Image 1 (spheres, helix red, strand yellow):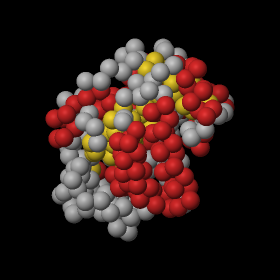
Image 2 (cartoon, one colour):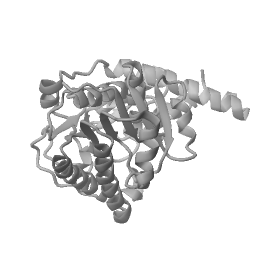
Image 3 (cartoon, one colour):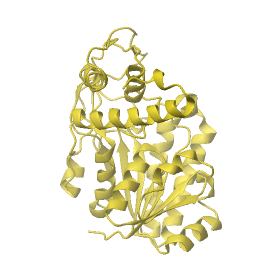
Image 4 (cartoon, helix red, strand yellow):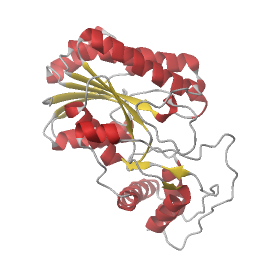
Amino acid sequence: MREIKTAVITGATGMIGTALAQLLSTEGITVAACVRPGSEKAARLLDLDKLYTIDMDLEELGKEEAFDKIFHMVGKVDAFFHLGWAGTFGEARDDMFLQNQNIRCVLDASKLAKRLGCQVFVGAGSQAEYGRVTDGVSLSTDTPTFPENGYGIAKLAAGQMSRILCRELGICHIWMRILSIYGPWDTEKTMVMSAVDTWIRGGKPAFSKGEQLWDYLYVKDAARALYLAAVLGKDGSIYPLGSGQVRKLKSYIKQIRDAVEPSAELGLGEIPYRPGQVMYLCADISELTKDTGFRPDYTFEEGIKETVAWRRTVMQAAAKASGCEGAVQK
């Protein structure tokens, strides 16, 4: 077991980063949260105990100033959680120069972790590293990888390269291949949050038939898994991160609708499946459970209720500030 008293988080204002910062704060861990200079999202971290925000772009991680900023703020660090990544949506996923820069940032973060005295480096990988697998096959540590876009290729390369580098540096290396996470602080571009927003506004979203078998994990569970992996995970491990269970996507959609407005129209079957639609996605979390004891605490129904309540509060505050309160249903 590794004792963690101080940690660094890059990507700290993202959905998982924010949840992780909250969790570490409640555990009494001092956190250096690296945030993009001028980020409005940094405000969501201001009320956390023992947390210090540090303005730092990912490209700065390899500079001497990065060490100075962090060390002078919190001193020696025990764990480094590298969640920051540029170009996660749309055409940017195939921007090869941008994705290549992400690989460099992961390696810079690994070297920075060593300089700061870290015991463990935890990196955020992705389901995209696997590419397309046979329906019914759960994604495990040993599932063959063949990513199909620049984002997945870069995540795979970053995980492999940083593992070798951390071995040379004498730091424990953990790589989490993250599946579908939902919850507060999520981007509006995801299926879950875009559906929540549309129903809150009184609209009707459009979905496919929703026959896909999918694995969703609540963000607070994801944050706890990352923390447990840092404390108890085995050096060199690759852990797929999800709930370990699948349900048809349409059942998730119905629960989202019911949490917002049970009488709203579902919109199922109104758009076709995308070309090459993945119909089965599930994480095999057996190794993660064996090594760390992690099991999800939240059911999807519990998590989506918290998510909807949070989103209503955010949208109502925004509508009030703009004088358009009538656009948001209570």
